[in-house]
Amino acid sequence: MSKSNVSLFILMFLCLSMLIGCTTASYGLKPTPVTEQKDTFTFKIFTGGFAGGEASDKRASEEFDLYKNENDYKSYKILNKQYELVPSGFVYTVRFFRDSH
Image (cartoon, rainbow, N blue to C red; front, side, top):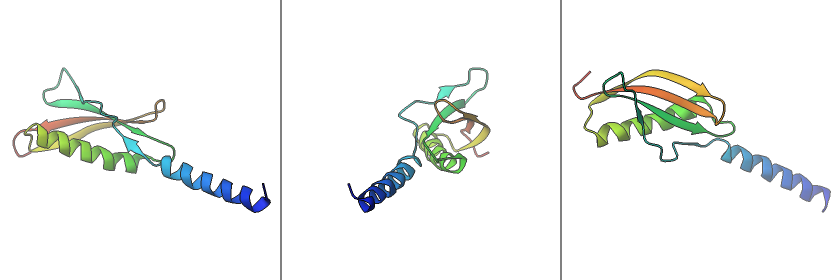
């Protein structure tokens, strides 16, 4: 393998790693009810590689809106956001409201 091919391979690997590493997902996990609080749930958003809080917040907002619309809620409020190292991601505690809040 020539020196230029090795350089090209390394560059492609780095670019691919960055693209893959910036993903966020819920992997189909359903929100978990918080038993002591009415209409309050936890959502886990997994992040990969270089994806951080901003990417997680964007994906979380999509998940919250979807849940809100599917369950006839009018609005929601994020009560807490906590980072988890393994598996990497954020856990959001969210309260939903059926009336305008």
